[in-house]
Image 1 (cartoon, rainbow, N blue to C red):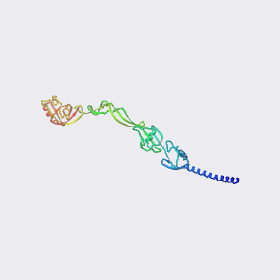
Image 2 (image 1 turned 60 degrees about the vertical axis):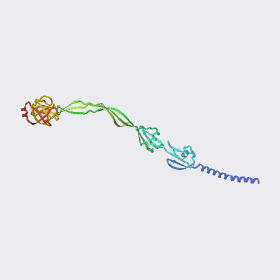
Image 3 (image 1 turned 90 degrees about the vertical axis):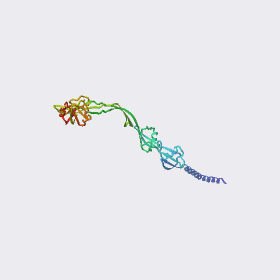
Image 4 (image 1 turned 45 degrees about the vertical axis):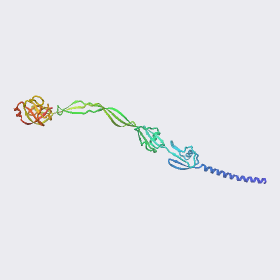
Length: 327
C-alpha cells in the first residue's frame, strides 16, 4: 500500500472514531442521569407526596423541595442519610401551644401527645391540688392554651366574738310597762379553725373545721314589770295577775296551818299547784292575805279565808271574788 493510501485510511478511521466516542459519552451520561435521578416519598404528618430528585441526601432533598424543619420537628432517616430509590422520608411536625402558668404565658412546641407530658417537657410540676384545663390526659392540639391553676389548702386559726343573748325576765317588783337592765351583756370568744383554699394566690373557699369556746358570753338580762295597779280603799295595789275564785271562810280548828304558823286573820288556804305557798294576795272584800294553808277541799279556783270568829266566818259565807296575786 502506497503512502498515499495509508494516509487516506488513517483519515477515514479518525472520522469513524469521533462519532463512536460521542455515542459512548451519551450512553454514559444517560446512565449517570438514570442513576442520579431517584423517586422517593415524602411523608409529612401522614400526608405523602412522591418526589423525583437528584439530591444525594435527605437534607438535600428537603432543601430542594423547600421543606423547612422547625424547632422540635422530627425527620427520619436523619438529614445526613443517603437517599435511595423508593425511600420514604418521614417528617413529624411538632405542635404549637401556649402554657399559662404562674402568671405567665409560655409559647411551647412539643412532640408529645398528652397535655401532662407537654407540661413535664417544659419543667412544669404539678402539686396534688393543682388544676389543669384541659385535663392532664387530654390530647395536645395545635394552637391550644393549657391553663395551670396553683391550688393549695391551708389551715388558719383565728379568734372570733360570740354574740350574747338578751333574755327577758318578768318581775312584780316593777310596774307594768317599765323595764330595767339587770345585767349587761358581754361578748364571748371562740377559737375557730378554718380550711382555706387558695387558687393562684386568691382565696376561693373557706370551710369551718372546728371551734372551741375560750370565754363564754354573758347574757344581757332585762327585767320587765309584770305588775298592774288597782285602787282599793284609796290604796294603789300592784299585782301580777288576777283570778276569779270561789271564796269560803273558816275559823279556829285547834291546829296550826299547813305552813306551820298559827292561823290568824290574813291567812288563806289555796291550791298550791295554782298559787305557791307564801304568795301574797289581795282579796276583794277581805283585804291582804298570804297563802299559808291548804285543804283537801280547796282545789282549783277555790280559796278559804281565815276569820277570827265563827260568826264572822258564817257572815262571809261563800262568794265569788277577785283575788289579786301580788308577787
